Amino acid sequence: MWALVPLCFAPLLQAKEDLKYPSHPVRFVVPYPPAGTTDIVARGIAAKLADHWSQQFVIDNRGGASTMIGADIVAKAIPDGYTLLLATQTTLSINPQVFKQISYNVTRDFAPITPVVYFPYVIAAHPSFPAKSITELISLAKTKPASIGYGTTGTASTNHVAGALLETMAGIKLLHVPFKGAGPALTATLSGEVPLVITGIATVLPHAQSGRARILAFCSEKRHPNWPDIATTGEAGLKGYDGGTWFSIVTRAGTPNAIVQALNRSIIAALASNDLKERFSAIGFDIRTSSPEAFGQFIKEDMARVAKVIQSSGIRID
Image (cartoon, rainbow, N blue to C red):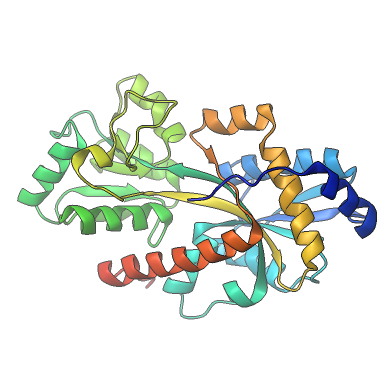
């Protein structure tokens, strides 16, 4: 999806000298409440950037409205590199497809810097659910169309899009059950209220280890190196299916390219540090980065891909 950009420290040091950037604290907007996975990623990167630049990168949690509150702040910021956004797939690819009125335009208002992490979701079930694998789930769903429920973090969430894509590629119809967050969705599955949940591995793994849930598969083609014993949807014949999400960093469009490039290099250097790699890997995140130009192209492609899934499945915000 993304290739790691080679680090080049000499130009980075030169950029610091020539740009005089940053000369004061940088605002790093996270469009989610504190303590979530986006917060963990942003704070880890911000600490590394602060050390590198000898300047504060201040986390500003602005959750709400499907990330649009935080995104709007950055979309209206001065284009000087002093306001960054931890932008998710929801922010850049999904919101423009499902909201009739949105206060920002992805291609007009944001300058891509780099993706930072990607993580595939898992499909997990209550222990009493009769299907013991993703293959068995698909077979069962074909006999019971629109009757097997799966919980997600909400309508038009990345989890919901992953579920809709699964339905399309597997030729099945499930029953989407939206919740207000990963916690309530998982709780519903653990209690047997909803048989399935599509969520992150870190959320469900402790319960799978204790026997309160069963992980049917990673939503990916290849097995995850951290959990090689967990099967994948690819092994059930769903080639090309990737059900997951990604986080990235963008800034205001119009920010000088030299600043964007310098930020790109310093963020990639931060993500190359052993402690961040270990911390993010432990919760199922794969570090994936690219040049700003490649990331800009990826956003366009992902928007088109998501739009196709949303249109074909009829996902909408009431």
